Length: 474
Ligand code: QV4
Image (cartoon, rainbow, N blue to C red):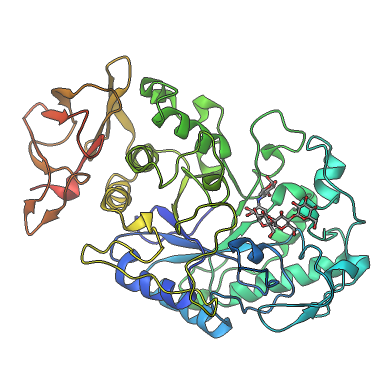
């Protein structure tokens, strides 16, 4: 279940973290479809506890499988899926199969009004009772398989997926989403569940809904959240044949490289050469909603110059199933999404350039990022050729004869003739500008009969990357 069921030549998933369903529907029609995005990962859809201050993470504490959250209700969800599929944008849902909510004093009331008593492991909305869960214990040793898979991740009541009842409820929930037209799932905390149990669940799911344009016998796409930095007892390899796996080493290493901790010249062997999973099994990202909040090597929107360069490399190098992050502004781990005085999530608003202004960051609307989504579509099915580097932090490469990229992460200019591998002509650099009515608003590069062009990226240019492709010829 590794096929994401993309439409046409599309290639990139965007995580619209905490967005409302009605806003995503609108975004599919007005932005994602026209810009060639392949799909959206949406926040959890099923009912969750209500935590004080409404942190984003309350959605990782389920109460029932009713489809009502702060993002909207079932009707709005269904409407979104249909409208996105209609413009060729797939929907992937973040699903919580590992656990229900953590402790809560007294009776908890969820986002759909359902009551539960998490302390007693009583979730009548499903229903689950104590016998559907593993006994309570804490994970203290992350290299102890029993603890990782049968104790409670941060105190979240740990479901027993070997039980027939639990399996049937999870399958029913996922099948309901398939019926509504989704293309697949991000499986949260997959590492905390035995791979045999997941295999049973995935293989029991219905085929995708043909009324939403999926071919007969299409299997749901599965990508599993397994954090494996190497040398872990529970490893990514146990899951990779069941579906794709989040490749966290990609995120850490790309952050290291573009922060300047590792020379860009080494990226020539990027991918399996770096110990990453085979391309078709790897879900790749510069940052995700968890690790963008941690200090460390991982880049996020707060370092925009490096972040845009890393994203350009991510989308230009033919490795992995790409996902880009679309965040809201945060100060700390608990910052809620943009919300009003009644704690309702607010809709994104845009300035005249299309950038988000009211607390939403919308990296996917940064020109340097959506232009690379277009680049990836334009160069699909080509290989890396013509690699060049200066032995340090200046690199360039071609994607067949359809695209060319150059990066300068040195503190001095990159100025020289380089092989772009492109047919002769003048091309618009889609990073510094756009091709509008046949003229380029940024840098232009003229390519001669031999495929060479003069490339300039000043060390103090606004962006440290330049990108040309055949669909942006002046
Ligand atoms: C607290 C204490 C615990 C204690 C518990 C007991 O910290 O030590 O046992 O109380 O009551 C929130 C709070 C957390 C609290 C917990 C339970 O932050 O302090 O525990 O609720 O009340 C998200 C957030 C968590 C959040 C959780 C549930 O990141 O902060 O916890 O949602 O709301 C590992 C896993 C990996 C996981 C990653 C974060 O292998 O699978 O940690 N990633 C996924 C999601 C992530 C999500 C979860 C898993 C849980 O990507 O966003 O956690 O669904 O690496």
